[in-house]
Amino acid sequence: MSLSWRLDWPGPGWPRLLLTAACAVLLGAAGGVGTSLAQQPAGGAPPSAEAVQTPAPVELRLGLLTREVPPPPLYDLLAVPADDAVAGAELAIKDNNTTGQFTGQSFALEPVTLAEDEDAGEAARKLADGGIKLLVVNLPAADLLKVDDAVKGKGVTLFNIGATDDALRAEQCRADVFHVAPSRAMLTDALMQFLAMKRWTKLFLIVGPNPEDQLYADALRKSAKKFGLKIVADKPWTFGPLGRDRSDSITRSDALVFSRGVDADVLVVADEANDFGNYIPFRTFEPRLVVGTQGLTAGTWHPAQDAWGSAQLQNRFLRATGRPMRATDYQAWLAVRMVGEAATRARTADPVALAKFMRSPDFSLAAFKGVPVSVRPWDQQVRQPLLIAQPLGIVSVAPEEGFLHQKTPLDTLGVDERESKCRLN
Image (tube, rainbow, N blue to C red; front, side, top):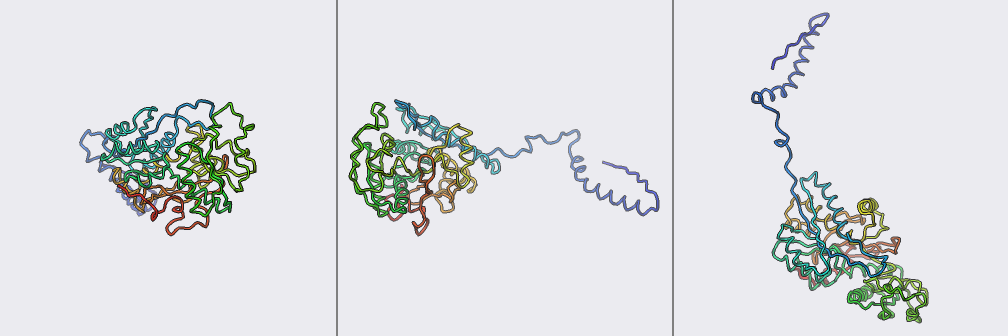
């Protein structure tokens, strides 16, 4: 390429020479462009977009197994939404993909909602055979174990977001299962820490008739002993599911006179099915606080949670779904975010490598709880703060101040390593 210049400069000749040199420098700087164009084949076009585009992102596919929610027989204030857990996982997929734009990774979710009588193990096997190696499971303990048995040897890692059974973290623990849902021991320890901190030490335990109620009550008894509280009365609920029986007017029922004469600071309710626990507050013979599965509760999440930046998570979820985020939604969000965080920091999409990294002390995740969450190596339980809340507000956060541990105060909630019966296999 040739360029001709004519410089007309009035006055002496040296300014003309100086300007000519400056133009030469500028032409030299631009010469790279001219040279590169000159080196193209004659008549050639610029490289196509396909030839210079960045490689396609590496995709990580996650599955989610849940069971459809049967409609309540009557109007139910606490009815579980049809997209419970799925909505939380979908929000986390969006969050993961936001980061994935910069790391060359993309994330996709394949949710499967099982019918009431559909086999969970067979559904899990189909997902694994289709290439899903990271599976979020929102099912009871028996189904979770069935799912794990079905995908054994297929390189699948499970994330338990629904089953709180302590046995899953003890005698029935599995090496390929991470527990994002808290154990019952964690939930009851959180409540007992709060009561011990308040010095409300005398407890009246009311236990429902369902097997899950018995398990929760067992955990409560252990937690009360652990933190020095005394159960002064321990009685079964034998008056039926008043919460489900519209024909029984609880305000005229004499069922709660059984609380008369018990010198207790707090009534502790074990009613995981929500059959009767919400009918106990303000209907006891003497004025009594109510805690447990109803009244003042412990959990991973709550609609009133807005600290540590969590208001933005609540708002994004509300805009996406039109409803508040529930604890199961949060646990699904947390499980999927764990995968995203591990993929970003370990710089891999290999499911086996991701699981290994999540087990390591290098893994932690900011989860809108004030401190990072991590995984306990002895039973693969996610250690995290728990919210102590009444229906419309946060009252406290466990672990409470003053409850110390040689490694982290978070390990004061649930079964510690030296007490664990888990032998990962």
